[in-house]
Amino acid sequence: MSSSSEPVHLNNHHRNTLRQLFQHPAGHNIEWHAVVSLLAAVGTVDERKDGKLAVTVGSETEFLDPPADKDIDTQMVVDLRRMLDSAGYGIEGGDINAPEQKD
Image (tube, rainbow, N blue to C red):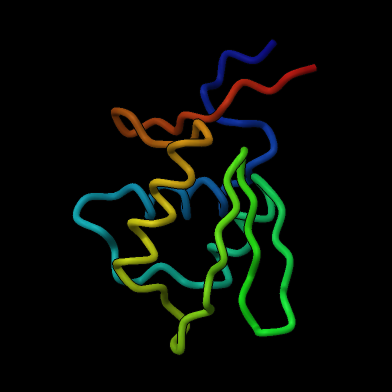
């Protein structure tokens, strides 16, 4: 059993992206490819024929439009915070919270 509060399946890049998403005020330099990588690590990501991504984290599925630029906008940050928080991911006191892994 590890004493670390960080989830084992998230690498440093994923943890940094998660911190950026929950940073206040919302960050404006969060890259789309980093977000997709994080979402794939914590859930499932499927590209649809219409170009949207079907993302399932926990029991929630969202359909995300890739941004025109390389960075996501503030509304997507808000939506992702809600989705990740409801699945048990979040930042508290600077530490990453993640759902307990079941063996």
